Length: 215
Image (tube, rainbow, N blue to C red; front, side, top):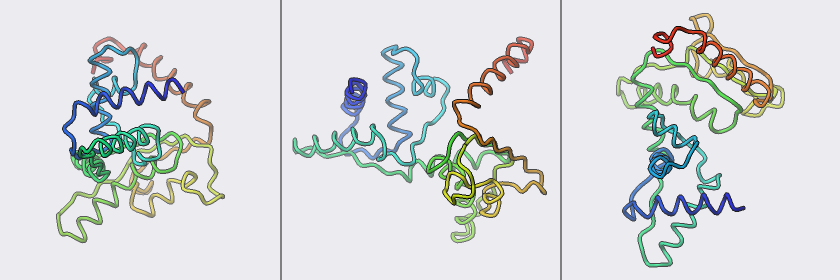
């Protein structure tokens, strides 16, 4: 509970520096949180590292989170004080992600778990394709050629988390294996598989010559 209160205090401090009425989205808000953590030298933090490495963090179901609740309460507090609340537009996240995807012909995706975050990241391919077909924008065709997924959810329950890559191919999200696509699905809990993968990557990086490691 103390951690939650601390999180709310950080978010309130971040929002206090933004002009009321500003339209935000998850990646713009979390970037500002990361910048504050870095400014105050808050120690190890995912959002701080993301800002330093210029990696955007998207939260597709932002209202279904502690930060989302804190954001909503902050807006209520502004209304009660007669001030303009912040607007939140999740489509700014979608457009930002799509813009980044457009820049690359070859795409890969590494997914842990399932649900909304997984599908949100995958559906950028049909989003660009549908936009091109309906609006005549000449959008490039972008599909994930390489894909790795760690998730224990089986396919036979019919849930979104268990959706296989072969089904994703039928939606135009992935390059078919017949066209060179390479997909691997690891049916395991992330707490088992992820540490092993991280350890293996670290060992390979440590084994490389220093020049190659920097590259």
